[in-house]
Amino acid sequence: MIEEKRQSSTPVIIRTLLLVLGLGIFIYTPLVSFLLFHSLAELFSIIIAAATFLIVWNTRDQIENSYLLFLGIALLPIAGLDLFHTLSYKGMNIFPDKDANLPTQLWIAARSFQAVVMVTAPFLIKRRLHSRTLLFAFLTILLVLLGLTFSGLFPDCYIEGQGLTGFKVLTEYAISAVLMLSLYFLYRRKDSFEPQVLQNLTYATITAIVAELAFTFYIGVYDLSNIIGHLFKVISFWFLYKALVETSLRKPIQILLQNQLRSEAALRKERDFSTAVFNSVGALIVVLNENGKIVRANKMFEHSSQLSPDQFLNKTLWELPVLARDANTIHTNFERAFSIDNPVSYQAHLQTEEGYLYAHRWTNTVIRKLDGSIEHVIAAGIDITEQKAAEERLRYISTHDTLTGLYNRTFFEAEIGRLQNSRLFPISIIMADLDNLKGLNDSQGHAAGDAALKELARIFTTTFRSEDIIARIGGDEFVVLLPETDVSTTHEMISRIYSAHEVYIKQNPGITFGFSLGSATAEAGTPLVKTLETADKAMYTTKKNGQ
Image 1: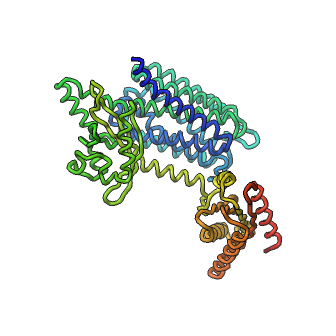
Image 2: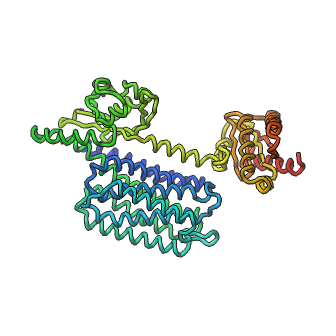
């Protein structure tokens, strides 16, 4: 009995340690880069919200509690507002004509919408909702709020040099009050929720209130109360995920399958019901025996894999050609599911005969008999192709300049730190500045200036090696990091740049632009920041001398 308690407590301990580790990383990240911390914190909550919406949307026909359906669908526009908040944050430079007021306005818009949703949801528990109409209404609200904030019609929330406006602070307090009211209404209808779901919703609301109160104190967008607010926001969204997905959607499937052990008469009735759910759920579901052989699969799996039952029955998932790319991962996680009591999650790709590749988040759940032996393993896969693509797009946006496609300042500064501790010395740095960009914009238009910037970026891209780091760090400033490159090689590179520029000018006589270059080389132990300053001074000397 004592041994059983120890085994059951082990996953809880592991989850607690992982939670503490995750929070530790979030707490440490601001010490390195607040912008990185903010991006990670927001992206974490955005991904959770978007993934939760996708799961709720694809299982909406099986959700009986309209509170959960209403809240789950509302997470999509909330994620949208938070995404624009992240992209517009100070330092991202994606909307260069906007200051810190815009992300603060988007934050208030998102949190106000979330508070209204949470205070309204308890009144909809017993009501029948039309999910498509509800989604259309929420997306319309999203577009309206984006229009108000980007057009300047939304009230000011932050003024540079002064801090938060009175409107912003009062609205945060109002949001906190509305969230507390939603908690009261939630407990008035607590009989409509499973205890664990109610607990997670309570934690989500309380941490959201703490986050809002934290955001009433900060003066600058990078200070401590801002960090605390974002940490509690991440925790709040995590509890929403647990309430809507982990405790409300995943466990009922497992319970449904375990009910097959009931009496013969009830079993036939349950079988008809489970078959309907099995084939209508918006996920790939495969039932495996203890040896990993497929004994059953739903219609979604047949449709996605383009395989007939004759082609996959009595075969393992890792033997199927459509999953061959990740065969080792699938096999390893099938065996791993036997060693722990909790579901095992992993990612695997499914490739159709036409060559289309889809990413899925798979979860293996072990179903045991009364004697503890393995009866089945349920492998459920949710399509995350669009989510992965969105993550890649966000990752690209966060590290690249939108005009030239080169790396941006944030990525460059991270690379400086990485190379400083590497064994790739000597490291050379080339600074470049497009001459008279303002004059070019004024005389020929901004399109001509943009074309010159892009052409200079192209010259750099074709001149340097793939391992060299090329970045645009300012309006007309470029920098190149050259690992394992000495002084003579660097000068050869500079000569090649000028030669490529001369070829371009000859081929395009109507387009004229110039640039100045400066370089410096660091040996092992030399601070790269100092080398960067030396290259920058050399570049300005070149510009001054008109070379």
